[in-house]
Length: 397
Image (cartoon, rainbow, N blue to C red; front, side, top):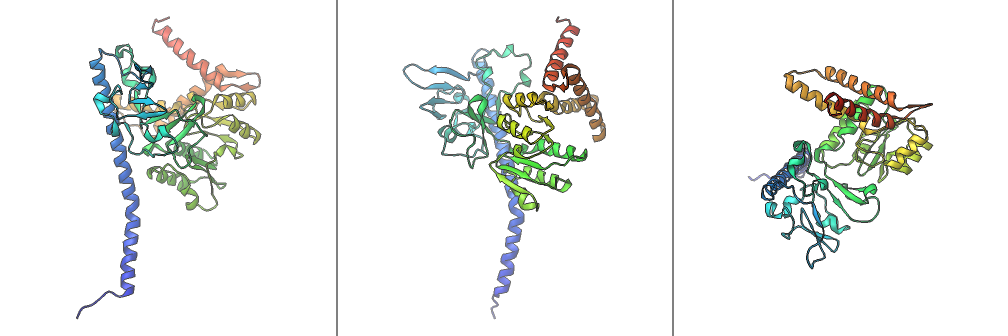
């Protein structure tokens, strides 16, 4: 006698399959993201190898960024990656300086690129950027070529328009340079913010906002260990968004397409892309009574924002001083490797604390004014003095 599944048994099986699928999907998504990241690294290696072949073929001169003008009777411009004409890039044409070595096409595009049809250059553009100052330079003139990033996982678009491109988290407006910059972070999203939130919470501060390309989260209760740990999950998702935080933690609110600088806080710490805090943001922070601004990212504040903070006598710590801990920690890692030591986290933290304290004292020495400490001035002079003293000690001056 044949036995058939009952309706209840079928529903149970379907439920089990759905549960298993929900458990597997995040893992599959992460595996796919890791695959894209590996593919991206492969593309950059191929571009780098092609550039070195170019150097060998052109008597030691590095790849030309562009010829800067039209060729012959054509109206286009020849770039390292292809051809630009009538506001459109074409990477399928052989005029690109690296085309003979890469073949153009997919090698020039990050696999994590999110295409948009709102901007022609972005739709057809490269996923990588070249350091334009290397344009046709003799490679032997570079003192430390191994320390120079010639090609990176971002690109620029000369498109015009508003401050952001809706629905595309890869695009950020670089107003100071007049164009958009495309950033493909892969697994690097939220690294700095996670570190800042961790350390600030350890020291007794209450972190109330985190932000991403999609907007920002306001959590009046403040971040704790569980919430900071969830930031790692957001980073691992490779979605570059913070909106899911509000769904996970009750009492928090997500503000789409807005920046956290509109919130009333004591300390503001930009941790992401450069130029993310502009003059209007600065004025809003000042009006809300901000007490300290610490630039944890590289050039997180625009010049007019910096001027506003200094004019208002708000202590402003520039990135060259505040985020020096990243380079310092790399130096400590190199020291451990060379001496074959293995310091504990506490030992590394103690050494880093000494380094950062020294930087702060140097800023005080050169930046103290009547009734105000100009950390920007102090960091600039301290950096200059360090180089000058080193040159004297080496006999250069």
